[in-house]
Length: 346
Image 1 (cartoon, helix red, strand yellow):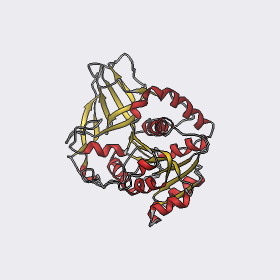
Image 2: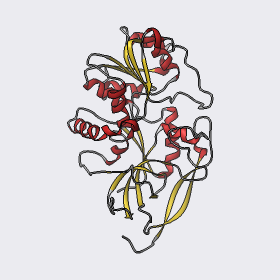
Image 3: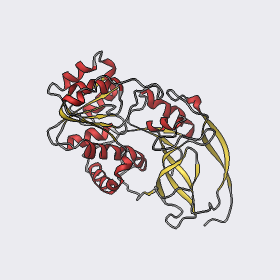
Image 4: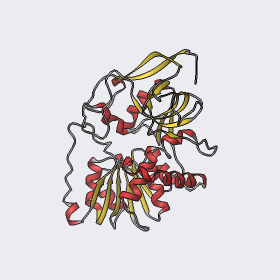
């Protein structure tokens, strides 16, 4: 408990209003307000935000659509997303001052968190960077784990294709597939990312989709025998090409559609008839459907990382003011690895 009510400045990123296309920096604004560092009420927490996560799903929250699994952002209010935070004051018996937590928080320096049921307490570990709780050990890492093992139903020796393969999710999918005994090819959007996939992340092959005039031909070159598993992070033309190259009884895990420039006017998929004659299973999923597996995931992936069996790349931006540009950069592939904002030093 804290008796004083010191007031401090609180930088915030405000969501200006609903959008349809790709996010722009001007859709957000930086604002300075004040916050009292005193007792929150009704079992809430007052936290200092250390790291914030930039994730593509957040674009869906910027449109005026209420039929999704997560409600839209509120215009003129602070953006929110996954973060790693330190508890400053607690009115909740499950948390105390000094605890490190991960979960939904505001895009601001200090936040009051009222919904505490989904928060996770972080056990500090000298061998694992704290920011990894937003990537490797957070929502993207768990998305990779649940999507690969539960949706893709992999077997050793199968041929796996991963799009956006150097991103927050894709880099772990590829490494899990290699550990499972699969042959893995990834696509990415720059020479630097392709080198990363082949030389640091252990993919068997990788290619720059921007240099391929014909994606179908590219996939036939890398998978002459066809694809057993396609882990799809991009949708669009790449999904269409993959449909032509799946093997019989292939599986497609639909994780993201970052290629769709406009959410309200998406491009259609032409090659869905492949689903029939190749008996393909194509399934969308959310990591939140598999939360019962999270403890097992945390234990397994932490151990892999500490043993040096997997690596994980982050793109770290300094300061809350860098957050809007970093978020917008996701949609042009500026980030190399998981995009994180460092708001403060612990």
